[in-house]
Length: 173
Image 1 (cartoon, one colour):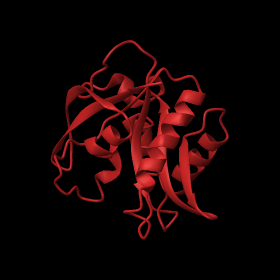
Image 2: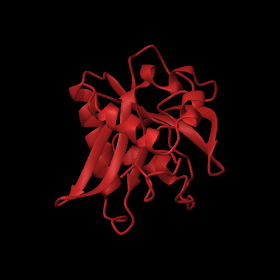
Image 3: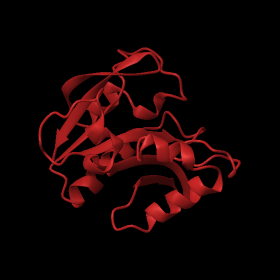
Image 4: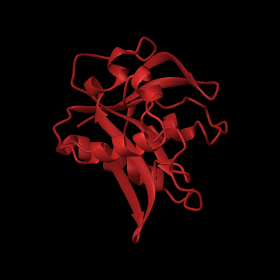
């Protein structure tokens, strides 16, 4: 779900916001897949999946903010000192979009974070004000998606994605 059709491609694998930039660029091809596989063996899993029967149709990345580059971001502010968990990638497989799967994924990510003791969950979606977001950059989600899941605007940021400003949305657990 997070890897490319060609396993030797050096694409995201949902690592660009999970690990430091230098480490992210150093991993190539199969190394990226191996890194993600190793993450799945840790006590805290790298995210949640959505299924349609036996088929994986969606993915949401979720982890403690302190474990991510977001902890050191100069563009996305810390709202307070709570041990927030971050949801930064929500993907739905083509052919399954428009069915509410992103909403289920976001709820699943929040539930998983709460189960692991997160006092608050935050995301950094675009504030696109209803305008279409390029699908390659839509993985960050939209403000409306997070609002529908009970998140509220916590802060504005200096970050952008697909030409839209990003905001910090939060939900207390």
